[in-house]
Image (cartoon, rainbow, N blue to C red; front, side, top):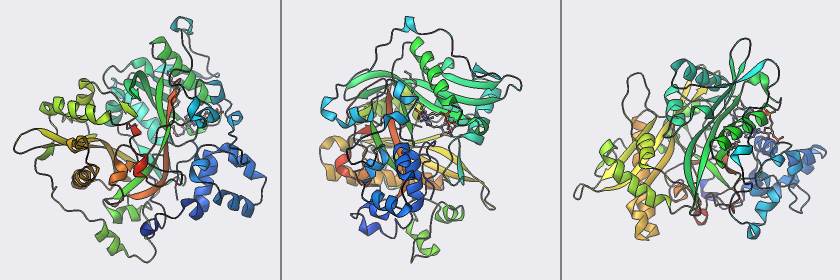
Length: 504
Ligand code: MYA
């Protein structure tokens, strides 16, 4: 089954684990015992240190050893020698960067939170490093529809795919506009590389400014995304050059920290979450090879199992409007503070990220629904999701899968201190989100194990995916933050309260 490949973001369509649904009642057994050959292959790609060590062993011995390691070891770059030795040496570039080393992060008691390196912007070079002959730097002007289209085309052909090259993310131009021109955005942080002769855009790395809180410390950061290299230019060490260039451009602008995510294990995740998938159109997902028919089930049974009511349940649920901005801002701000790592939104950002304004020629990217109490007219809850389609590669029947990704949500019930009531409320609120997504013709609803999601994922029939998403901070040290999963990569309500940020 596809997985977050070594270069992937862990976000391309990830199929629910084979047999997961059939085994739903047996969740307490260790996942590592059921590890499939494909999963082993993906894990190896995510853990080069382990891969090197296993290369010299025969397959049976390697499989046996893997079965005895737990998922967190496999995912965080631990090697096999039993001394928890982690292999920084294999990261030739990352070992030179101001990021925590694996061994620092394991020694949680010694972690003093804060910047790793103090940067003096006056000492930062005013010119980029040279690129290899035939290529040159460019700054993308995404307000120019032509340049937006160029980035769209680069990503559409070369961005994150699943391991079996069955699906590739297809960020729409409207999506890129939304994601990369948020309040305070800077043109210089939309970095490209062009082939000098043909002028063709062959690589990108982008950032937008925002503020996050790490255990109540507010930090100005750049959110880095859309690192992409044309397939023909892979494995030429262009990535470090791109990362150094965007770092230089951030430093010059007085930003010394960044946040980013990836499916690949790098030094060193501050948190890791797992993907979950809720089929909305099970038959289509089956036809494109995303969903399996669990052993002993039938197509009809799967369709029935995943059916949703047509009407939402919460009285007062309606699309968010401009007039709701203050109420959502206030509610989300309080809700966010319940998580160790969260986004400190401004009012302007709330408007940008959540309010859909119909514009001619632009596809809808974000759907936000508020719950307005019919009596008090107070906004008591909200839920949002965004649209990220994937191209289906080489399928005779379908070209795209329309995936809704759970974005931010919040409810007043969270502040009652009653955990059971919170769970009950979220089951209804998120189920209403599923219904809205189904009515908006989405095929699947994806969510990570962040926020309070472990409270509802299984009951709402989300299946565990094989994709992992790691969260990273650049030039900032912080003790690990729980990601809603335990050492066996299973949902764990005791591991909530960590990640409160959703990265696109
Ligand atoms: S994650 C999405 C990444 N994009 C894709 O997966 C799209 C499809 N794949 C590709 O385009 C290429 O395969 C990429 C690698 C570009 C991923 N993040 O050039 P190389 C390291 C960071 O020969 P290639 C997103 O957008 C690798 O470990 N590093 O490799 C967030 C090795 O270093 P080391 C990565 O395969 C991005 C080196 O690159 C990643 O041709 C956040 C090899 O370079 C990765 N996803 O191309 C970036 N993948 O020797 C960090 C590989 O040490 C931002 N590598 O092992 C940091 C903050 C910067 C701003 C700071 C401001 C203060």
